[in-house]
Image 1: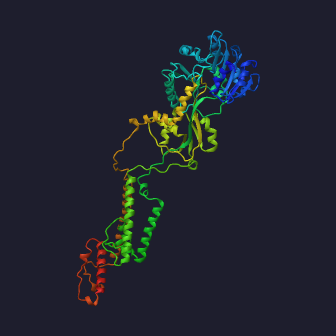
Image 2 (image 1 turned 180 degrees about the vertical axis):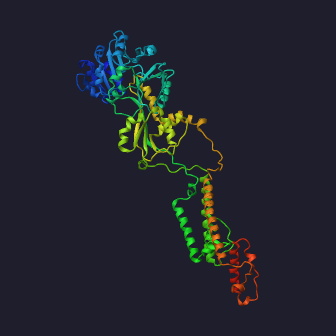
Length: 635
């Protein structure tokens, strides 16, 4: 194998085990023939001629466009490259006797995409072969010193080897402040926000992707110029998946963008931010103070509690029937049913059952009431001193049942509207991006808001980051879509390996957590966003249910008082109709109720002592009279 073939083999064998060589030399000269016949057996070589109409479909990152002289390269029209479906920088190797600065100027003019150009120069006066490359960026004012032809390696004929390893040029670690032009196809999202200052006629970008760009330019010591493409032509270009017009209308070395990933036949250095879209919903309404009365126990507990009390009341009623007259008029209450409530509220029992069986039942009931009362009081105090919300919407079916409206930011809606409208089945409204963050926070903290917002965890955090506030994440259980926001560099030049290394490090280290912790979380800890717990003081809102109960009790007491007046007037009229002589002594003898054992006993109770001016004392007198009759019968 001669030196030419060995140079080519050494140049590529370290970086590929499968090489696609496309010969543009016009004929299979000695160089191409020896490469095909004498390469290492571990390397698979596929040789094609440029006359083959299908050559453009086979180009990959491992392809080599081979030119055995510089004139053939000059005749090569870059429009031929746009026949290549793999739109990415291609390795172009030129074997030539000499190369001038004007040759590089022609290359820069003819080839807009910054391909990897390598030149193996063999001059008659030089004893060795030299490998050159150059940076194909078109910014002479700033980066002219980098754009000159650079020697990256040299092959010694005497030692039969390359002088430096690896033979490819080292990664650029310092761009000396050179401007890296990045184009952006813009759909406004929370990841890449654009602002326009009307007074200063100045626009600027902000967002996580811009933050990452700033870190990249620090690592590369370059200046990034982000060119924004906002008109409809950009959308049309990407919609047809061709970048020919964009490439020839702008001078770009990179392409940074943030939108849902499309299947472009384009290779680029990129990272994908996964965004699982969810339906975020507002919180449930706060329980009122009166509703908190029944909140300590769930439905089953309250049912069991009611059944137990009802069983106790029925048992007492069945054992000891109660007279209606005693229930309303007896001065000293001896109603057994009320003893159940006395036990529950912890009032002491002055009389205990005589039988052991009855005492066991009473003590068991007292213990049950103690447990229930203590648990209720503890939870009731906890609930009345805290703000508790009703359950939020959990499923898509609940949103549909409550006629919720789906709100989306206009940039996101362009990608997901058709898909969402078919699968979700909710009425939709589009919110402009400029108002979306405020709309997002204002409505998703309002319990009365009957709407849901399509977003993801990352967008949620960023909206709050820009507003410098906090808000809990509340969303329905099922995710809606799984989208990717792509951040990439589309046309890498010789610096792409260094750029790929940086991006790979960001991805490996967790890009999402990286920028959230570095930017968002540090700002969330500002004084405007934190709050210290305050001492809870009971106020009217906490105890509102107690006042409501007092109002209802007073209202019922007023009704009972009116009933007592009516009953009193009725009884007064009844006694006057009997024409009782109030001046006459009323005795047992006059009433004919004196037993034989007490015939000589005079009670000595006069009507003046009993009636006076108040008819209500008649009832008390009758009670005393009845009790005395019973005691007399016993005797």
